Amino acid sequence: MKSKQKDKDYMKAVRFYEEGELEKALKKCDESISNNLRNAATLNLKGLILYLKGDLEGAKAQWKINSEHNDDSLAKHYIHDSKSDIKRAQYYKVGESYLKQLRIEEAIAELEKCTESDFNSIKVNLALSICYLRKGDYARSSVYATKVLNVDRNNIGAKNIAKELKDVGGIKLEVSKRNIWAKGLLFTVATVIIVGSIVAGARIYLNSKNTSSESSETLVEKNQDTDNAQEENIDDKNETKEKGETKTENLVDFSVLESSVNNKDYEAIYNNIKNVNGNDLKGRDKTIYYKGIEILKNEGANFFYRKGSELYNKKALNEAKSEFSKGYEYGNGNYIYPHIVFFKAATDEELGNIDDAISGYEEFYNKFKNETYMEETTYKLALLYKERDIDKSIAFAREIREKYPSSMYNNKAISNLLDTK
Image 1 (cartoon, helix red, strand yellow):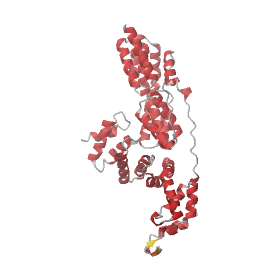
Image 2 (cartoon, helix red, strand yellow):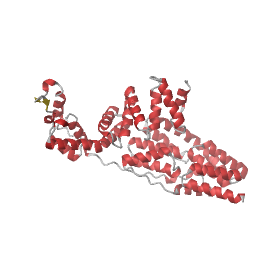
Image 3 (cartoon, helix red, strand yellow):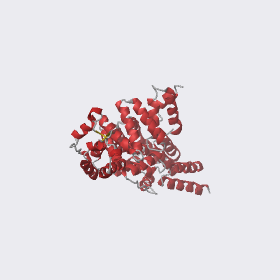
Image 4 (cartoon, one colour):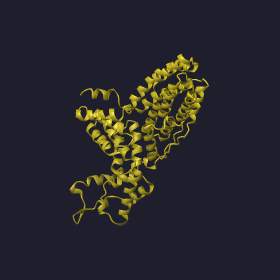
């Protein structure tokens, strides 16, 4: 009877594992092992799951039990092969550190070294997905996020990325109900082939589809003189008045603005519209103006965010801030707005504008509780407030510890803050 129960628990563990329900799979493994410590297959499966989750010592403990109690040759092979994963754990820590600092290219270089085996693959693939998301490479980000969800269906970080990829990039992740890769890996375990060799030949990177180049990246400068005149018009001496009102609309060539609107030249639309007073407009000019505003709100905000992200990753921070600011001006209510708010704050932080960065992060913190960057925002506020308001700093640090105990942001810096009181 116990044997049948043991087999039933093991088979359920296998099913949960293949379905990406890792916690349920681990629970069934424990139940199976408690019935019979000599269940070699279950011990290897539990070790494998812990290995994928990055718990190298926990995985080795299962394989050691299997090796000693069952003289299992596969478990012995795992223990021997896992020695090289110690270095990969170090690579991951360095890559994670770079990611926290938003040093994306350096983070990718370190994380790529970790992909030579399946050790810690959930965290490694999640970190790579975040890196490519930060670069605006949505296609490649989706590859890594899909890998995470195929193995760990309930991974919160990957779920948040999936939502963002759908909202921002229009990419819907295809996650299998039964993970063929996991099933193949389990089969390999049963046939005594080392875990580290499995993914090496199966690493497939989707060619990132270059987002269609925006025609508006080549700016039209025909109106430079006109724009200068608009700026000078702020001075009362140069204002043209009629019935006591400034005729701002007369300073804009609406035929040029209409052409920009029709061509969806977002930069040109922004540069022409920014000094127009819509209340002074009538007829066709008013129609063109509000059509331009609508385009900036719906499509322009996305364009400015993408352009700002590209500049940010190139460390062209002042230019990036300019683009994020344009998106911020027109993006409120747009699905892209939370991302603009976050990266505008991150750019200010990089530029050393700490007060502006805190203001931006606090706006994100107060408005977007369920968005992708919430953990990172809370972490940033904990660190940035350290020299300005230690009580606020500690409060944010405590929130990291309590709400995100497994997060990479629950680290030594947070511990040091909490130890101060």
